[in-house]
Length: 191
Length: 250
Image (tube, rainbow over all chains, first blue to last red; front, side, top):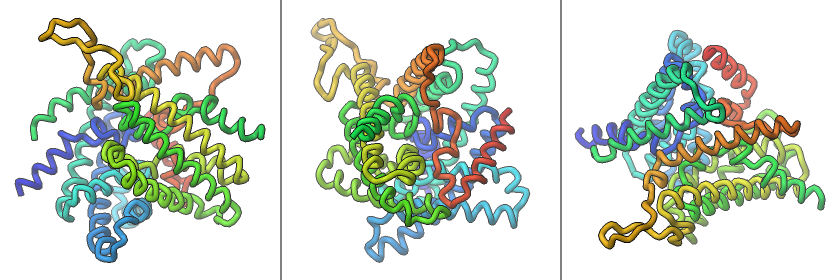
């Protein structure tokens, strides 16, 4: 139990997926203009990353490893993730329209997210078992949500500030991300 | 021959993936802690890019249009797996430095972008050189960013001490490294300055009437352009959706 909590905290805060590993940078910069949309994106990432961690981990444990095909992990994972996101989208559309309304638009953007593949591969390199993988995926996604929501909050304020012309747009967002990364760096002593 | 030179120039200078198109930002930020890592990552990507461009160009008339993106991904992922094992076997120190970012070459926008926009429409030889030019341009970008970060963050270039370090104990004056630049936050700051410089250059070029090619990918706020979203052959839907989010953001 203690070990699982450690994985959760480490993946959510200490090794924040965006701010210290640079995975999932695309949605972090692209969908962080408003807190509302950022939270929606975060929710979708939590949903997909948890499921994909489970599925890829099961596939690795029960199919790739016993048959000795573990070297195919990159190819298998990327195809599985792409199909999975598509499947989740169709399932939500049919069965849970309310959830689809709030998360649906973000789902296709998530396949773009290298965090999903990155975490699947990390689960394998860290030789996590299935439960640990799911917790790692969940923690990573929570970390992503924390980062993107904070970023969106800051960006809403930045809108009204006077920024030097060359830094307008994505440059000032990157400076903000850098400052946030310094703040998150403070957590590195926690574990 | 002209075409080959033109492709190389296009990749290295005119449409440099790092400086002009701003693609592949995830590895750019992650691995440029030193110049040598930048070179390693750049060259690995170059090899994948050349091989995948070549194979995709050869297969361009065989792959049905509807399943082209999954097919491209399988081709790219196969070459990435090969490169991963070659680096692991022959350059173990580089492998441990780059770690997870080698398999993540698969989701690098540059590779799928070139497959989609060039290799799938052009003959083999120009495609190979298009890949080579883009790859070398990417290597150049990563190396330069790596050099900047290494000099500021450690006073070194390629591991050689070029700025003598200060030593308080011996009361020796010298350079005090700004360690944050080889850590994660420094990557964001260096990229921010790069984007700002490019904004100025872009504006100047526009005033001269020779605008630079537009930035693509994440920094242009265009997540779906990386093609990964269209792996299931629904690129139109993705574009529609990202249009929706853009509207929602307004």
